[in-house]
Length: 378
Image (cartoon, rainbow, N blue to C red; front, side):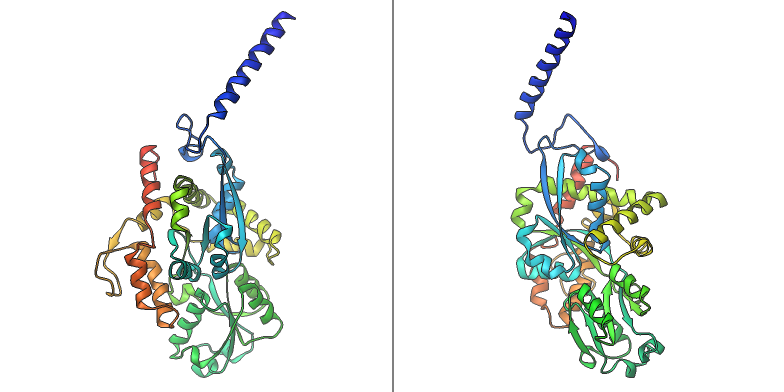
């Protein structure tokens, strides 16, 4: 009896010591431990709210990392705040700490709100244009006469508009030759199903849904050669307040991208989680669509991410001569310059983005320094 009592006392003393140590924890990482990918977990639970683009794979490595337990191991709780529209996500910026969206949302965030792009997390090639089978455009999309006077339903001010303009330019036309109907991407598909419009511009899960409904894909960003980067962004004050948390979260994102590419089994598991989330959010999706969406995903690995925010060369357009540009800046400028050509933004906006460093490499450099210090290869 005395032996069991002694053991009980020893356990109780250890528990008290452990709790006492826990009360002294701070929000900095615990240097005495390493966990996922060799990263150091936080001593205290951290919470990161992420503006999440539902149905677009650009956001989903955060979800996959959560499912794999990576954030739990690092003592981080992520809260996914869902959106299906970049500009709406940016307008609701009080609801998140960092957000992930396409080029339209990024440009809006930088020009309208002074936010900083801190990551590129996908290059979308599945931004697609659809028409009804049997229509003149379905029979011959290369004939400009078949385009003239048609009605197109798509989210204006996004890369869907950029793809449509690229397709029109290919046949010598502009937006003035068609009628545009501005709708959120999910509502655009619903309206098109109901008979509105002659053409539809949508992306990712919505594009494959349209395809499976029998609509004809006549062009997409991949076939048109339109580079469409998607990224993560944050307000400057948020970066300063929780820089270390953001750096670790971004590192987890890109290491999860590497996990995704590592094997067909991993990609299959990711497609399953993608499908579950889409259904939870009320998006029309099935196993086939989920697999196709993930097959089209083009997120950068860790080494590619760091290179995007460190490699430099002159401005391809020759418009900015004050300094060489980061590759991330050059990639984003492709879309921004399109929006400028459409009168949505100006050259002054372009210069302000570059002058103020709103495509911000400091998070990538912080991730690089962290990995080098921990001797984590990438």
